[in-house]
Image (cartoon, helix red, strand yellow):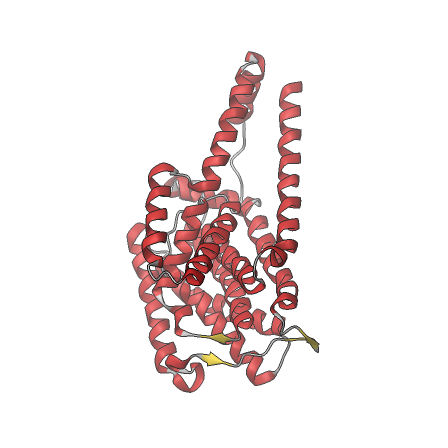
Length: 343
């Protein structure tokens, strides 16, 4: 019992330590890399975490999340240009539009599972891409939406270094929302649905309603990330709603490790940094490199980089517990008596 208490206390301290290290790295990131790249890492990290709510915790693979990232990017840009409101307000408006767009898409897509769900989301995303391309009077078409201002309540944050610290709180709030969802009773039900949807339905949980709800939450967080991304770059283009953007965020989530949250942050840092390095070096075969890395990770690290590291630590912790037979029995009893999470 004493050993178990020590292990649980150590695990809590490890979590707090990781949180502290993450905050320090987030605050110091523009000092370590080029500030625009640091902002890109933060935006893609939140985007991947939003996707992980669906993929890692609900078991739904979406190939259409570019629709929410891109629609928020355009909306935030239009609000900032047409109204002159501070960019946090514009980003919030973009996130709201992304969530409203996700309601009908999620309602229809969640009626399917597996590859059919993925294809339905991809089809809707391509519809958004077509609208953005054809509605040139609003989106700028192939030229994109240019000249998006960076007003921050009258403070000049046009310098990428200062804009990073102005936009970082929005990213951190989005990450906190994702963490809160995962560690709530609602998040526990999502995991139960992922593991066995039929049993969850038999227990009385409205499975479709839970899926639609997490789909909308995921879209809203994707919208926050896409809005900050568009304001940071000063424009929104068709690339934001193109299917390759959806594929990139899936790659980031799987590379870091699905169902971990932290893995998405790690994957975003690696992919964005790699893209920046290859762009500076003049190498054009970016897809070859990222594709090769993806294949290696899938073959050698089935749980992703962060997931594999976490699994190895869990195995080491279990070995320490099994050294004490009484402790192992107590741990087994604790697991068998754990109640089913309620919604």
